[in-house]
Figure 1 (cartoon, rainbow, N blue to C red):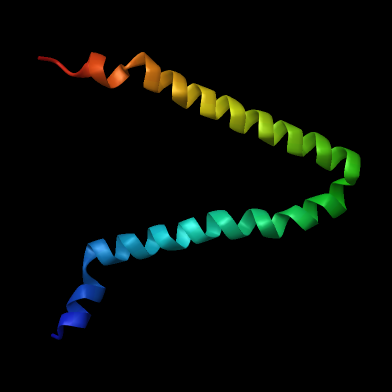
Figure 2 (figure 1 turned 120 degrees about the vertical axis):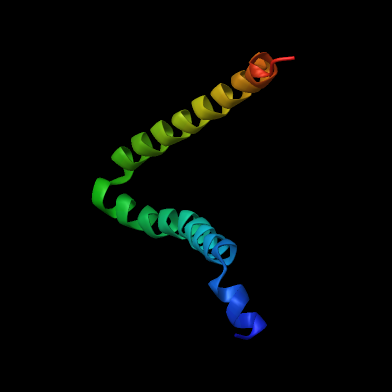
Length: 79
């Protein structure tokens, strides 16, 4: 069994490949859906959806920042 075959069959290589495909899909799928949603919803409804998504992203960032400030990790570590 060659070294390349051994690397290709390793579980870490398979996991990295799967995560790479998922990351690419996370970038490509929204770009493909954007024109479809704009055409199906119309300008006004698409604007409402875009503002809603932006608000959700803002809340997610603030929540994540809040968890970082609350030091949940520092509290959970026992000495």
